[in-house]
Length: 554
Image (tube, rainbow, N blue to C red; front, side, top):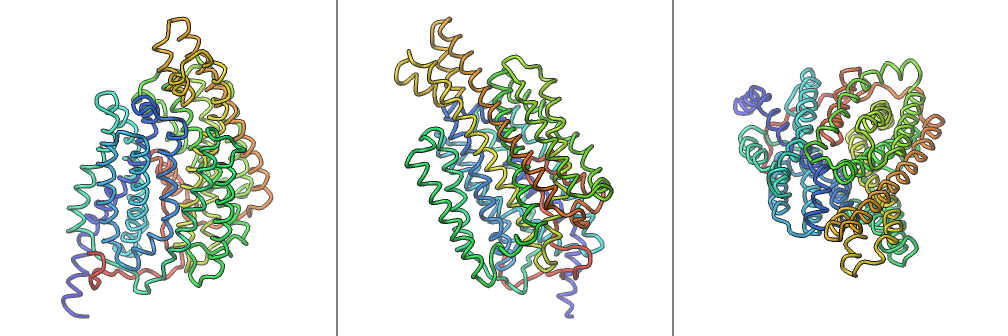
């Protein structure tokens, strides 16, 4: 080995912890970018006169693009350079955040959020790949633990900062939170992050990526727009038909290519298919409920964005207390029983939300969150382990990507499915309340609860009170219907998991022990964004550190 190469390796080793700091800072952007929007939804409804479908899109567009590109961007970094992919993602996120802060219409903001999702898909896989390449095997678990803990803890401040900003500045200020983080990460990363890439340079699957995005987007479009267009309308049925055809083409394409983005043969394994479906459902429940409850807090109970953020914080300690128990419980009772019990708790928590009314005390909402969040914490680790244990060691990266993509897909579907159920109920119920209004007033009131409250504020006292109270009651009724649908899905999933999920799913990822399981829960509960798990597992050959490459990643 030449002296220059030895010097490069030694320098890379000496600054590895500084590299880790930059990578953690880079990933913060993904966390803050996703979690900070939750408390902003009612503000967008008021300031930009957003309809319920637009509110759903502004949340779902990020997750949709993120999930659709996650398989391809990891391979892109491996092929052309991880450092370059990371820095392109940071620049793209910076541009999208700046444009989002200046957006004056909801569709501009939705487009910016989609670009942020693409940028996040470039950033997230690159950070973990670089960590695995920079740290030797004996230090890698510690580095990944720090990476997960710091990003998870810091991500929890996203909603709090957003809540404070919304109380002092305009809605666009929440997107500028990322700007100083990106600036520091870009400059420091230029000097401290090494260039590396996979010497085998796996093939890309752009056709598979495109088909998956088009198919899933068509499905979500149909779900979100159905309340406005009608579930039996030509537009809705056409969108469902396009989704079915394109997703079928995606499956056929993935079955015939040599290196598929997603190997469909994995789904023959009960652990993989059950774990993936279960993960989608868990995140469907979590994101769908949070989408509705943040609006309930602000538009029904009258809490400020900051006050709403503070009231959502107990989710994190609930997860952190319950999650460390899952590895031991799974060994004692079987992963299938633990996950099924978690699904039942999710169902119970969602049914408890049926008791919400216009004057429900916060403590009841908190009480309802205990079984919901506790059930989520019980299910995450075993299902992650089920997915990873079903994938051969050489394809662990694909298993990790599927784990993360299923979470993001569940998040998008949660907002689409539960949000659309609630929106359909609202649209049908509010119709009788707006009969005497002018055309413009009626359109605004029917678009969203915030719109109805705004119209009510311009009406005579008695009429305004009747409209606001009636619209709030209809909205709460929509929440009741949505959580009932979610509870039924969770109960059905519990039965399926009990039958098809294996008793033993191995010790993958968070199932190594209580600490790893708690780190995963902290990352999700505090950051609001799914964690990524390492591509290597016990017994795998150690990855070689590659401090330099020939031009890629510049």
